[in-house]
Length: 330
Ligand code: PBG
Image (tube, rainbow, N blue to C red; front, side):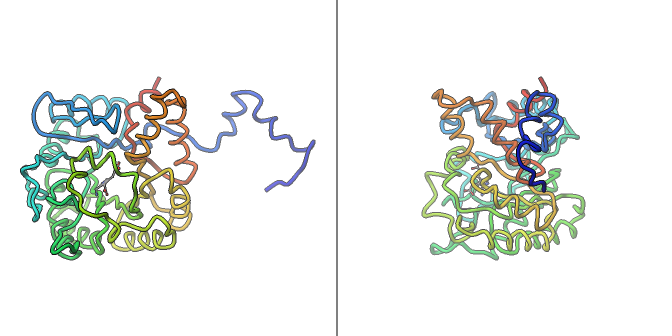
């Protein structure tokens, strides 16, 4: 690094014109960096707004189709599905999670039939199917680990069977990546990729998401016995190392903006495909401020996403994906 002082070095020489600034720009954001998380529900003609996520809605599958087509046409490489499960189908045993005909699996088949080149990612966790809103099976107030892993493997296999390209275990049980990887190999799904939610923190920023999938009213207590304590960096890195050892192809840090230090550390330490999830609460904060006229929404959106690239991420899951893609292609 140069330590030359004024006037030999004047940093502003290269900031003088747009062309000069662009010549020395270190990082870039493209539509290829985006994964679009989309909420789905049953029914037809439904595009149900989620009040805590302005501009985001739960779509019935007939509405998902044109939305996915548009995203695909804009160059977004992947869509990640999150189901709003019918309240009557939420049980303590979560059987709906591995029903081959559940909403997610029907959506996967529909999308793969229509747009084979669009990558379909799924979430693996029991919360959208659980009577008590937790990611794992709950017995006598305890979130069971190994029994949950068995359920998650069934869930993941059903998604792979339906044609999912990328599985995203977001549950934070121990041993799920290894169990899932072995099961995929054994069942003839050796090409299905795992993007592990490896460094997932017990965060308050998931609030609007829990509204979106209808889990907030049900959740008793919090997720602190399985998600990482937001104060812990070393533990997050150990979780990433473990998931990579067990067979994750890509890893994720979640939430995103308050955890950019973790993104950078993961990229530097492991050099593996690294993603961040700009979660619902981050989106909600930016949208709320923009709607109040307190900041320029589009500029803040682009800046927030560029920060992930600077922090070493290869891509970002963001509810802004369709809007950014539109802006970037204009
Ligand atoms: C489910 C899951 C959550 C999110 C993604 N998958 C919620 C949670 O862990 O409570 C949050 C995503 C967001 O807030 O946008 N396990």
